[in-house]
Length: 304
View (cartoon, helix red, strand yellow):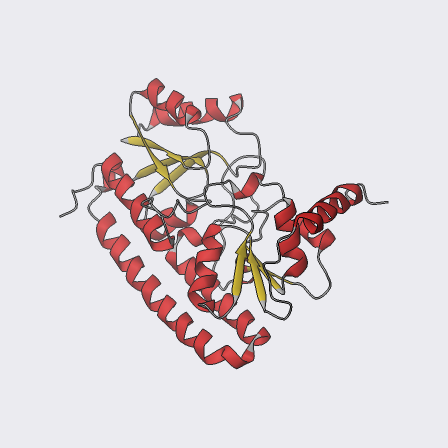
């Protein structure tokens, strides 16, 4: 017997017993794994489809554990959009409990976008899952989302295509805006150091040298070996600032910043959007906020 079975059965029972009557019996339903994907799916789906997000905004998608409401949403859903490439280790539980009629779509794994390897840590060499950190990667996600929705909901194809085109135009404009803003950072200052190696695609898109303490957040955070390795690298080439992310403790970066006597900046948003009243309230705002943090930390020109 599968060792996960008692855990799954318990979650299912709790979910059913506590479930509010929130869904119409015949409505078309989508679930998303975390807030960034939810934002991108909404840009194509609009208000035509009910969307339920599993990992709450602000929480770490890597280390999430499914809850009874999550299980209910999975049981009710027609499509689940998730990132893939190991970003959501808990997807094995979704696959174990999902109905045959639930379509699982791994956006990163199906996107027409060149993957990079994870640069360090336990999963070094595996495909880096954080493709959305480059607007071109997000645009590739939009294509997969639109194609999937059209296949499952063809009567809304025109609306989906229109919104996907609008999303592509907005992402291209965002890309140009970020590139222009980042050109103000001197080439000699373009060393970006974060806790998790979640900004490799961003660094490739905008020509930063990049380093991180660990690879992904579901491995050991800030091991002695990883900290010592980063300390040696920083001693060789000290950056203008170090950066921490919103979903991880800043203690590791704080210790390194004190050691090499540089500023600590953040948070950067990578694995989640911010709250609705935060500067990272949606996907474009998240990247614009991150860019302003880099400007402040790495010596770029002030915004007008």
